Each structure stands twice: as structure tokens, then as C-alpha cells.
Image (tube, rainbow, N blue to C red; front, side, top):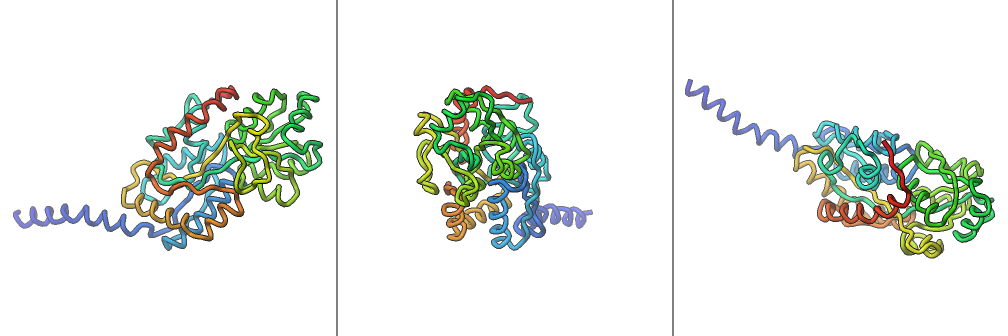
Length: 323
């Protein structure tokens, strides 16, 4: 009997050690990376680039799974409800953590309790692009065009309640124009219609819109930051025409609540290493028009509080409420 107790005690003592070793070995298989938006937009581009880096750094595949719909809620709920074992992580953003908690009266997840905010990946502005054939070459000319024909012109977005949608709604209110919102299932699906003129304009994240502008397929009229973007200094800020107009975005990485601390710490360190890579910094700043925020968890909670406060004017002006 005494020997049996000693054996059980020994097993109990080694159990935490075994668990720690299992966590330390993470990742030992493929990791799912949920992107709560359709392929083709800025969220998809950034996620695939960061997953490629994490695969190289951690020695296992990080595979993007696009789970779009409901303004990002469908994919975010799947992330929040996933097993907290480190093998499902995903993209979090201004939509999941700032806008949707304010827009939806019955949000199916709690961004602060159900998801660990591991690190920011990028800070970005939205870019207003219009069909190349549209007879407007500035924000002022666009406003005059829309005022001359109320209800004639349309703006697309990646879905109701997205930062792209709210950027347009804030523009409508502040410019005093009547333009029609046309929601799509992701920003990537819009460009064919925007280029052809089926829709006339779109506010899109810089990574997906800037290449279209640089390629001459779309005209870029204004950015949604308070001042011009270093990535496209030739494009004015909308605030130069509409003082006080600001609508900025961000991307980050989240994991289900309950994911063991050793896994979170290793993921956090790997993201920091990825963002310090000169190639990634070149892609972020030079090609995609992104700003690099501090990596990791430090300061993330304070950033979220400030971001939610900053978006209040846009949400109030837009008057949008979803259920």
C-alpha cells in the first residue's frame, strides 16, 4: 500500500512537468489561423505574410482559413470557441474588438474575456478609391458631384458594420451627401465592379487599395487618417477637405482564452521576431502602406481603450446599429 501511494505521488509530481514539456514543444503540428474575412482584402494579405513568417520561425505550418461573414463575427466566434491548445489562433482587428461590440446588441463573444490579444500586427488607414472614369479628381470634386445628383452614386464595402462601411457612413454625414451603400462579402470581391463602374467608390484598407491606385485601375482621392500617410504622401487626407474626419484601423493576433501561458509567450516572441524582419518591414511600409506598432501584449489593453474612444464619433455620426 505504501509503495502504491509513493508511485501515485510520483506520478502526480511529474504530471505538471509533463504538461509543461508538452506546451514547450508547441507547435508540434499544423496551426490554423482564422481570418474572419473573405480572401483578397488587406486582412488576407497580412495574415498570409505573417503566417509564412511564423511557419519559418516555429518550424510548423501556419495555415490561413478564411471564415468571412457578419462583419467578421462568424470567424471571430470560431476563434473564441476553439480549443485553447495553441492550434487555433487568428486575426483580430478594429472590427472584432472595437466596432462590433458597439454595433451588435447581442454579440456572440466577449472580446476581452473570450480572446487573448497576443500582439498587434499593423496600424493602417483606409483609402478612398473611385472608378477611374468618374469625373472627380479630388475629395472636393467628389462631394460636389454627389451633391449635384443625390442617390445616384454608390460606395461599396466589405460588409455592414465594417470599418470600411463606417468610413463611408461618416463621409456621408460629414460631407452632407446622399450615396448608396452596397455591401459585398469581402473587399476583394469589389474591385472588378469598382474598376468597371458598377459601384463608384470604396473605402478600403490600404494594403488592398493602394496597388489598384498605383496600377492606374482606380483613382485614390483621400486617406482616412488625420494627416497624409507616409506610404502615399501624394494622396491628401480627407480631413484636409472635411476637418475632423478620421477613421483608422489595425490588425492583430488573438488566441482562445485559456491557451496556456507558455504557448502564448512563445507565439508572442515569434510575432515580435517576424515583425523585426527587414523583409516584412519593407512589405509593411513600402508595399502595403502599413505602420508597425509595438509587438506583444504590453500596452495592448491601453491601446484598445483609446481605440474604442477614438471610434465613438464615427459610430455616433453613422447611427448604424446591427443585431
